[in-house]
Length: 128
Image (cartoon, rainbow, N blue to C red; front, side):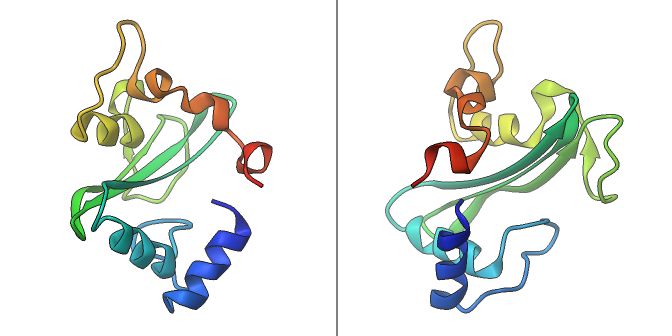
């Protein structure tokens, strides 16, 4: 999510605070996602990794209701907030969310890799 989209959501949906449990999901972005879910399933994910350690956070809406999460996971050596539960690769929040929403993983890959999300590591690399 670009800084411009985040700022627009904060103005339009009156929500600059951070949704409970998340590091960056603003209340405005959460309200926007919930509204978008009237017509489609919306999945919000946030991850940070460096040197193989990091965390995932995920939540999904459908018809303005939360249908997954919020879910917070971390790798064994990551020092995240206490509500981030330790998980292996298959049990990380984004994989759990994609699985819950019906995405089958390809053999030998997890859901994250099946979708090719690794190609989109930095928003600034693909968003205009």
